[in-house]
Length: 225
Image (cartoon, rainbow, N blue to C red):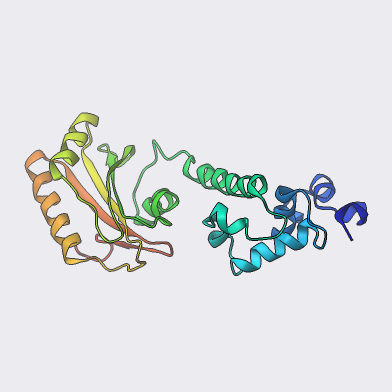
């Protein structure tokens, strides 16, 4: 039975209008993106298969490629692109939450700001958060990006940017695509090197936070500062 033959109140689009977005299941929301099914399955059934292929994990589905989506019968380039675009908009909406003029007085707040940016990346990125003397975020900056296991960091560039924005303190932040939360020897050496440079310029390093998909490690929280 195709969706048009369903009771009106059970059809995903009509259900969205009458009951709101929270009333729809994940497969029903996907069905709205898919639009129509194939000769054997409805759009909802295709949505269920796509979800099952990602172990019913929306985070995994959000990273699915256009090519993988097109493996499902009834999903061509257009429908695959609609699904990918929808997830990308969702990701960008998380990243665009206002975080400027926010006091960063805990590692949890840093995690909330940075996880949408770097938590799911397959490569490593190193970011600098610049703060004023009230510990208020005034700028966040991507210093460098690298491969799976490392990225290059130029300490001189860190302090050049801090002076440019008049920052009085900074927070270092990078991700571990491997999922390993423990800092490496290189991470510790870099932290020490950056802290030494800040002492000369009277710019304080408040923390160095390592972020993975599922959590974070704070040098400050762990007493390594």
